[in-house]
Image 1 (cartoon, rainbow, N blue to C red):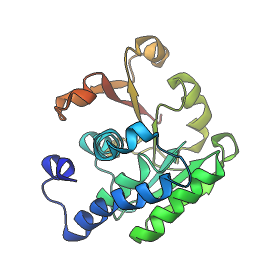
Image 2: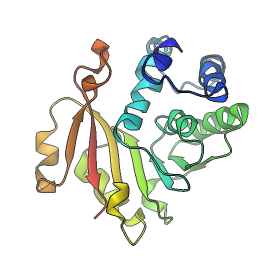
Image 3: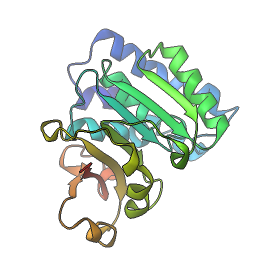
Image 4: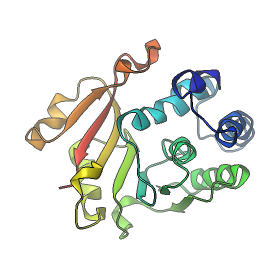
Length: 207
């Protein structure tokens, strides 16, 4: 939890309580439904919570905006972002029902009224959103084709609407098809832990 406060110094008491509660909740549910590897559960706050919050260092989701988290797994990046942005609406989907069960248990335990979760594949989702987030579900070209139908219209460029995608390594080949529209932000620019040395937030505008 200290690592979250290291980089987010203006958390409210409620946000601190919610972030602090994540460890116990995930330890409990991960022992029953494996959504985080046993190796990684020891590094929950760095590798999952803080990694998710890299998106919050790149964009500030406005009040009332709708954010879709595709392939959320156990709730990343959606749950940490929902704690940071309590007045933004988050819709978390995953194709595995037991993972969504964990997401709903976490949501209920933390009383996150700005979160909805559903057992759905992106291909079957017809709702529209201002922003779409995800953590390395597939290649970026494939991901874009899956979700481009889910952006709201009209597009408001002042809100920097689009995809915020967490990915690592060399992805220049994946970005080649976006004709310079994408932006690659190195997470190591704002988080100094070695884990983030090769990790990035990729922004692709919705239009």
